Amino acid sequence: MTGHHHHDLTLSDDPAANRRALEQVLASGTGGTLRLPAGTFTLDRGVVLGPGWTLTGAAPGPGP
Image (tube, rainbow, N blue to C red; front, side, top):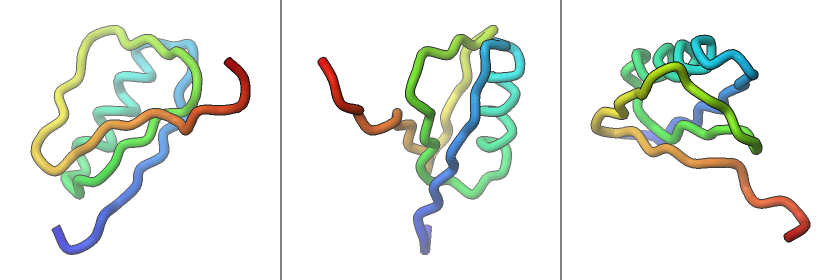
């Protein structure tokens, strides 16, 4: 991979929409870092990250 792409997702309280959002980015085939927003978001089923992908969460905020 010649560059490193960052893909920031917006997720909601809809488990099926969250999974579709993840799969849409993963299907792009570009690879890179898939960054999830802060919070807890459910999926209606699992997803598989292929080669070239990294999954990360939001940076920790202030507080305990």
